Amino acid sequence: MSAVIRAENLSKWYGNVLGLSEVTLEIENGVTGLLGPNGAGKSTFMKLVTGQMKPNIGSVTVGGRRAWNDPALFAKIGFCPEPDAFYEDVTGWEFLTGLLRLQGFCRAEAAERAARALDIVDLAKDKDRLIRGYSRGMRQRVKFAQAIAHDPEIIVLDEPLSGLDPLSKRKLIKLIKDFRSEGRTVLVSSHVLPEIEALTSRIVLIHQGKILAQGDIPYVRELIEAHPHVISIRSSDPRRLAAGFIGDAAVRKLTFDPDGKTLVIETHKRDAFFGRLTGAVLEAGVLVDEITSPDDNLQAVFDYLVGK
Amino acid sequence: MTAKQSIAAFGASASQVFAFYFILGRKSAKTRVFALLGLVPVVLAVVVRIVMRGRAEDVMAVFTEILMVLFLQFYIVILSLFFGTSIVAEEIEGRTLPYLITRPLTKPGIIVGKFGAYALLMALMVTVNLALSYFIMNGYRLGEASLYLTFLRYAGVLGLGVLAYTAFFVFLGAVLKRAILVGLVFGFGWENVIQYFPGSTQKFSLVHYLKSLLPYRPAPGGKSTLSLLLFRLEPTTPAVSILTLAAVTAVLLALACWIFRAKEYLFEE
Image 1 (cartoon, each protein chain N blue to C red):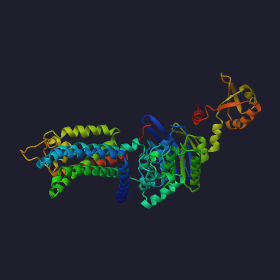
Image 2 (tube, chains in turn purple, blue):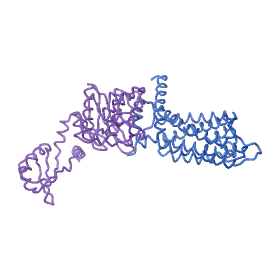
Image 3 (cartoon, each protein chain N blue to C red):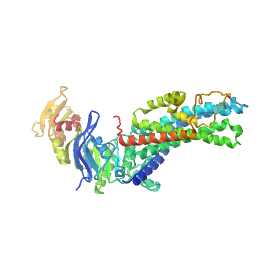
Image 4 (tube, each protein chain N blue to C red):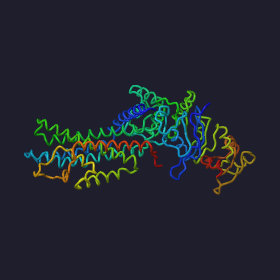
């Protein structure tokens, strides 16, 4: 399969700040997840792909064409930006029809497409309300609608699931998955691994402007699994609970917090550990107040992967 | 892409952007505020009409030397400053630029389309307020055909002013981050001072060419009221004035398009 989006030695910096560094990447048809903590370079990469910025070094092509200052290419691209930014004084309907008119559609077709897109994101009944009065989730949905209303071949979505309620999130995930079966190319970014996992099995890990790893989810999971996780459990009797884990091969270290109420467990098999946790709690017969994982976030995983 | 295709793409982009921003502009709070501000000369016209009852011969002098000062040296300058600099700046500050530049639109088409939409909005605001104040003051001679011709000339002068000033401020907005401050210095500093310099120095201001096109001149040796607007004016011929204003508009707009096409606009995080 040939690459739709191709980046070669792509570098971009803002003054002294490095945005992207020597990124070489090929993105094929289907859904590709761009995963990285905030400030990793995901948005920079997407802005370069959508021609909003030009590379300092290297090149990025979409369908074999350089994106910077090639307006004809944008008929094929749909972009959902990350910032919560709108023309606030228009209604959802005016926003969509207006942008579709800018896409080159006649009035009737713009109206038809806007109605369809608003229906897809469940905003049909709120279409005549000013965007200023939309909730965060509605704003996120209308932003998504403008990215897909013109049926683009290539869809670039920058954190499209942030701010959505679970139901809308599920619907959007299904929709994005459907794009894959329609043969479209979707590039979607997130800093939340489960979100990306729900969307695709093909992911690119990006950190500090560099591609850290790319491949399918099991491979990345493997990398993450190797990362020792720390889990704190506040309970009525932490020592009794600890006794149940002594023989567990997944546990590397057991310590107690000075308050005497918290058991801190280090494991390198996070999923296996959580699989056993409920049983262990029941066996020990203790009351659990709180379970937290201080480093259960992407930043910690990335820090681990880059050897910090 | 051939030259013919490029021109067609530019024309299509400009007309689509024009239609979109004319609607957005009409609905914006900025437009409402400036439309209200335009009522100041209208209120003044009512006051002048009441005060000058029975002194019909001085009405045109007062209109030119007081009300036109407001229109020419304040209203169109402030309108053009805020609308012109906002053509690029509002997209950056509002972070809405991606909606525009990821569409199949040429960047010069975006600038020219927005310029056209905002210029038309401003021209409408100026013309309505000018018509109200002009006809309130000249209400006693509505039957004279010359009254309407003179009005058209005043409206034309202000229209040219809107185009030239807006082109200048669009250019500033495309180049600078804080264009409005530089624009204030230009519009109310440079333009206000340089126009009163004798000789050819006054020709380095846009307002000089606009004043040169005004239909009313005080009679030589005649009694003039407040000659603030026409003080020290050494007029340029109408043809040269129109050509100069048109050239300034075209060149500055072309430069703004070129800069907007070449420059990356980054949002402040």
